[in-house]
Length: 168
View 1 (cartoon, rainbow, N blue to C red):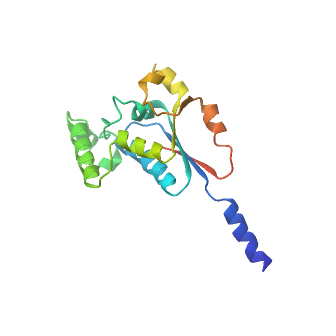
View 2: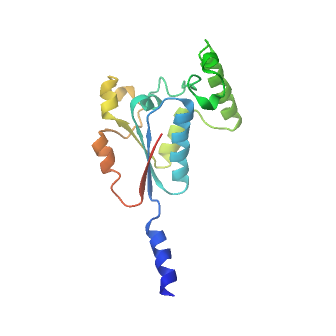
View 3: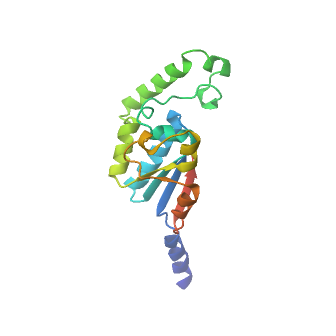
């Protein structure tokens, strides 16, 4: 009987307690992937944090967050030749089509999705190095960003057992 209880106990010890998502891109698909994973974790009672770096900082800039695009060039998921994806207006057309489909599914715009996420207890951080590189100031970001962190600060937040980091 003891051999059956030991594996069950080990499985309970490895339970996911915290998810930390790094978003480095500003495309619609990357930003929504981060938001859906982060929000889904909160809905499951899992602690959740997002760390935005490089172009991922655009999801935290009020002037840009609701105007993100789909990448049509070099995106094999678009199933269109690169030459066609590079034609003037293709990125705008593809982005409008994707947003229309998202509206049908009642998926909120980025600004609203971030508010929902924060209201659920999620945390949002911006990368200090990327902010310095792009010459962004704290006031350029969405007012509800929790903090601007260094990479070391971010890793220090991931020290507890049961924490997973996902890079998008």
